[in-house]
Amino acid sequence: MIFSTDFLLSLIIVAIIVGISAELMEVQETRMNERFRETYTRDKGATAADVLINTPGDPVNWEKLPVSTCRYPGLAVPGKRGVISYEKIMKLRSKPELLERAFRGLHVRIVLSPLNDRISPIIIGDELKGNEIHVFRRTVNCNFLSDYVIRREECLCPSGHGENWTCMNFRVNDSLDYYLISEGCSGSFILDTDCNRSHEEIKIRSGSLKLNLTGQSVVWIHLHGCGRGVIIAGLPRSGMDCPLKPDYFEVQPCSLQILISPC
Image 1 (cartoon, rainbow, N blue to C red):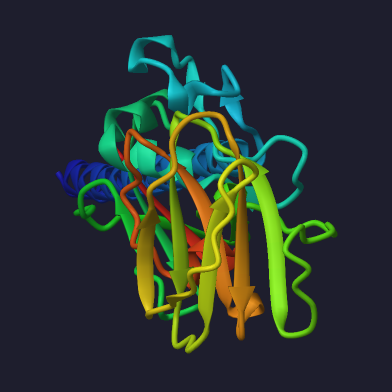
Image 2: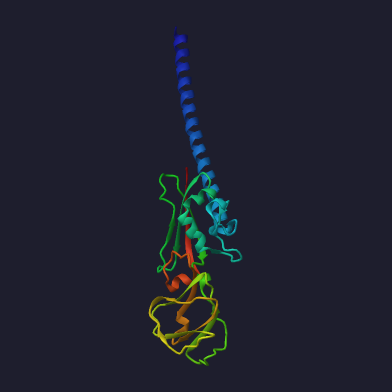
């Protein structure tokens, strides 16, 4: 009887130990699975983030095409290392479903924060919820509207303007709207064409002024007093969702933050 009682007690102790061990193993396995899932999600997100930032996407001009033609989006400007495209960013903001093609099986939110606080941050995607959120931060340069600036080249002014004048010419493109953009400039400008010379000086005011340019003629703009503080830009007539301020017409350093979580 004593033997039987000891034997039963031993069985109970062994059963308790086995039960505890099994529970501990299950907890450990659960932790390992969670850790594996977190690592997998983080690595998958990091790879997708690098592809998004460092490639232009497929096709490279996907931002100008219907959504159905985009195999996967990318932000890089071809031929410009470390520069991302404002147009591609804005396309993603208007069509956030494209992010699913770059971050399959993940929820994504992107925040582009220019270091220049005069430029507003751009946010793509909804706010993420849950405990498993991974954040990737990259420093990039964004071109914003810098590609639409009409560059000034050395040229001989036909009106003979000299010191304190900045004179430039360009051929009008009917698909563009042209703007004179300034901030705090007190100078003036003259606008004429190769066929119609003008001597009327127009005072430059802070802000943007749309220039009434049509046809395919060559236009001359003569800036008097503050030529270097004025930007001439030709923007697509389809419209650009961006304030016409001088800061937007320069390449700007930005912090790009990509947040991901599993679906």
